[in-house]
Image 1 (cartoon, one colour):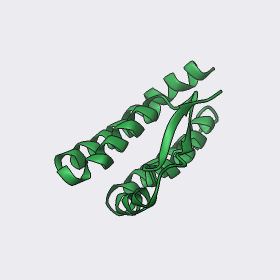
Image 2 (cartoon, rainbow, N blue to C red):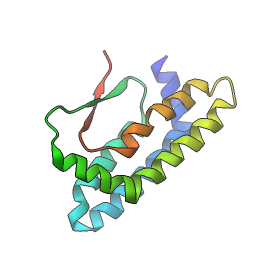
Image 3 (cartoon, rainbow, N blue to C red):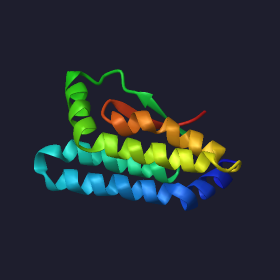
Image 4 (cartoon, rainbow, N blue to C red):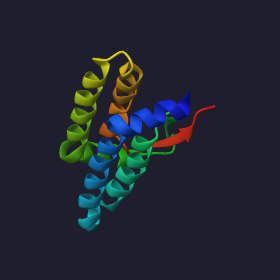
Length: 124
């Protein structure tokens, strides 16, 4: 079932959401000081391509630097990506087959807003 959902996801929205994350990552990597944001964006782009079978969990060892970094991320890139997830999620929830994909889009909003201090792990 995961494979089927991932394939439908990839075709309907995963590819386009991953492109958004890659663009944000490239822009962040061009500016030398924001390379950690770019790396986090590339990590989330990988997750946006194939989300089913993986989940996001907070890293307990993340400190104050990740909080400050997340605030900067929200201002410059996070809210754009979150709006993309909201619009795509609503569009997918219009159809019956798209409802699980829309819910998955809504679940990706927190990591699109605060990528630092979280990691992507396989589900059990």
